[in-house]
Image (cartoon, rainbow, N blue to C red; front, side, top):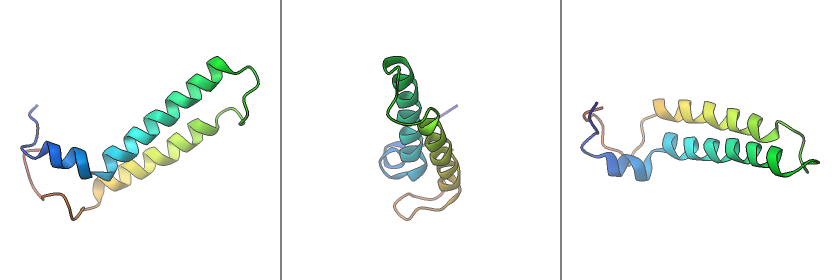
Length: 75
């Protein structure tokens, strides 16, 4: 496996990566609330449901051409 030559540009601009980070934070929030709160302020599974929606968005964003990213590469 080899990194793209323009991986820094992809890291800065790719919506699929941004949405993946948001989904990861939501998943971590679900775990943290479950561990720290015996009576959570939100219904259980709320963060997990949001993470699922964001993950689907990340998959869709992966397929869309983005203007700020160069096309092609060593992916």
